[in-house]
Image (cartoon, rainbow, N blue to C red):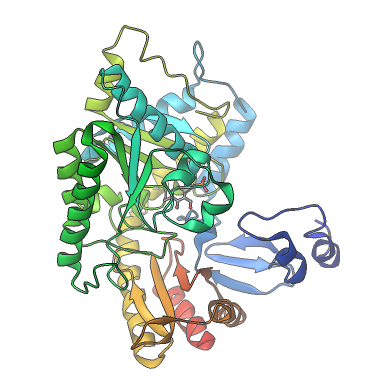
Length: 447
Ligand code: PLP
């Protein structure tokens, strides 16, 4: 490894960082992480903290998951790559598809289409949804609906269904035919409704309204995160996603669950759809599927959706979609080992227990610090603190405030993430109670 001076001097010389203005990388250099063990990361200066971001919501099993590292090394040794495009397959991906089918059986998901990450999974689901309707003879169903504040990645299709202007404006025109409806965001919503159950009903009514306006027969799919993540950890009322499911089914619209963050235990359930008792038509996964150790993803497909493709002999069901790395054997081996560890450690229960401790601690911080306008979470280990200048008016905090909190928390022992006015927490699911206390104490030092 090059020394710290070299790394700091050259960070932004030849490297553009995602989600960052190049000038910002030059003017305020990032923290350069060089090592990680357990739930802790260490920077180039030797400062070690608890990673309350969990990489990027993906390192659920922490950084020292030996079985996953061993599986990757062994697979690299035996078969580092082979394609699964028409005519060939590989053993690791066959075994993984079988395992995922069992894991997602309670969600009614029975087939897997593999990808290289979350955005790829979303893109795949959007394309397969249109193809599904074309096979069934409803070629007019081409539009997509999604939630404002939703995040689905930055491919052109995914950005088109994203509900945040930051990922859209500079890249427009995006896909035509994408429309957004209000999210059940209790702290701020266009209905000025503070009761989550009533808000869920208002948002469902807005969805019905949009469907009527567009014409149900023109809509291919509705895509949503079971708990909105990057948009600021927004858990809907328990009635919301079942309500969406009912509306979609009634109108012949496919429901795509974007489970890129919520699958594999993060919400305290094995999937976000299962948390709400919903069976989607398609579910997008990525991130924790390989614990962040290998770029990988999967779209899980319901039995009924699969039947439409599998029963067609007209040629329309040929899947004209896929990636060189779809079903990569090293990714598949990593995912198999992750799934085994995820189940062996029962990380969903630890996420629920540690998440409850975190939530209580964050509410205690809110009671002491005026700047914390809203505490969101309550389902596993995904939380957000929304910072305000004034609680009564909910005026957002000055743009510099979240960054200052993040810096101070880092100095005091925890890496947290800033997203707009929010401080976001998505630590590894193998966190201990002591780690939760370290994160809370670091945040306290930040306020
Ligand atoms: N969908 C959701 C819900 C996400 O949170 C993300 C990334 O954070 C994506 C899709 C995009 O995934 P990727 O960055 O792997 O393309």
